[in-house]
Image 1 (cartoon, helix red, strand yellow):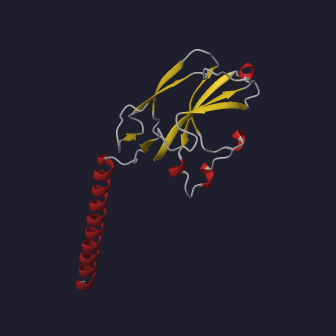
Image 2 (cartoon, helix red, strand yellow):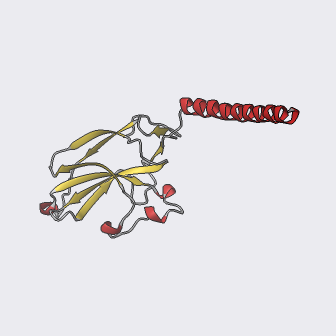
Length: 169
C-alpha cells in the first residue's frame, strides 16, 4: 500500500514509502515444507516493460527479470509479516507492483504471491525517479558559463591591446 494513494498519484523515489504485508494463503501449499526464506521484491509492471527486453517476464522464475529491486528477505514464518519501505533513490521511473517469493535452502524460488492480479493490471503504482539536478547545480552552471564568456572576452580585449602596443612600436 503506497503512502499516497489516488488516481494519477506518482510516488517520489527517496521520499515516499510503501507498506507491505504478506502471509501464506489460507489454502496453504504442498511445498510449504521447502520454504526457508521469503524475499520481497519490487517488480516492473507491463507498461514499464514495453521495449525493454532486460525487464522481460519469464514463466521460469530463475529467468524472470521482472523483479530486480530487493526490498527485504526474511526467514519464513507462518504469521503475518509486514514492512514499511521507503522507495530507494535509485529506483527508475516506472509502474510497479510487489511480489513475495518463497525460497528453498538452495535459494531457488518455489512459490510466489504478488500485489496485483495475474494479468498485472490492478493495484499498480507509479514512481518518479530523482532527476539528479538541484537548483544549486543549475545556479553553479550558469555562474561558470558567465565566467567563461567574460574570461574569453577579457582575453580577446587584452590580446587586441597588446597587438596595438606592438604595432605602434
